[in-house]
Amino acid sequence: MVYHPVMPRPQRLLSVLLAVGVAGCAAAPRNAALGPMPLDSTFYISTRLREAGRTVRRLSDSLEYGLIVTPRPSAEAAAHGGELPFDVVDSITLSREEFVTTLRDRAGPEGFAVLYTHGFGTSMAEAWEQAAHARARSQGTQPWVVFTWPASDSWLAWPRNGNGLATSYRADSALATASRGAFIRAFGTVRAAVGSSGLLLFTHSMGGQLAGEAIAADDTLRLGLTTDQLRGIAFFAPDVEGIHFGDVLVPTLLPLTRRLVLYASSKDRALATAGMISKTTRAGRIPSWSRLPLSRPGLESVDMTKGTSASGPFRYLFGARHGVRHATAALFDMIFIVGGGYSAECREVLSIAARTAADTWKLFAGALPSPTAVSRCAFRQAQ
Image (cartoon, rainbow, N blue to C red; front, side, top):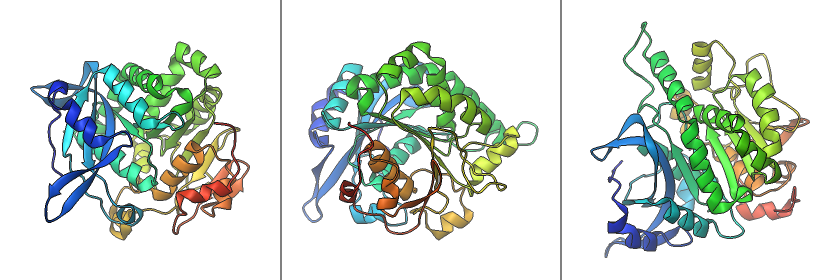
């Protein structure tokens, strides 16, 4: 991966915004032989401290707003297995006002934006990559904003008591807790740009712990969202203790959003390890004694164990089975059914999942439909 440092706002604002364009992608010259290179952009809000221009694993007193410009993968490449290229060809910091205006223009009056919160052991550059690839795999065109907090750059740290993984995990958990206030401020900025109805919150792993607990603890925010609900909240493989998730977070968050969705798997090795470290069952992992994901009234629970994935056989055999950027079926579901406001039954209409209980669904493997196919489904509610 080629990484270009973020440049200050005055030097590049006009050129970057022209390259990105209102629709979020344009063509920039590559060379005469290869022709134009399609470009795309990802917004970010960072609470990582910068020292001498480089991010460090500490919380900053302020938020950094910006966007990165990357090559846009073809639809064919995004739909199939294997890795996608990721090169940051340009980047820029923005003021909060510029960020709000640019994101509002990108989302449009009838669209929505995805606020993505990453998990444990994720560097800033990796968080950018995850968001860019997940957006491409989803087949959606909505703008994505990644909230990046100072997680470790890897899953291992200098071991204490003989376990480097547990040391790194616990350190990240503490930093996730410390980042809740910054997340609430970032959440408020995205909401100011697109409104509650235009905001789809998408959390991954420990990011679900961070975002869920932050919203649950903020009385003022919850009061506002009770009368002005979010478009949706989607928890992908949440690294949250299962009973706490079901009995505390679910009833607390349900009044604040039109849709509340859990994506879980029975094969998630990272959450199995997290469960061993914490001595609990995590909400994002379907336990061996159950064939169904965690279920609560009002919660849409989606078993993504066998859903279409771009991870490939090698990654499936030897990987953690936890990453978000290869989960094409879950990403399609999240963008076009949840974000699109279509009823849960649309999953059966499109043959991407089957109902296994009242509010529980199981994703299928196989080719995904065209995004235009959702027009055959009934709306859940007016948007």
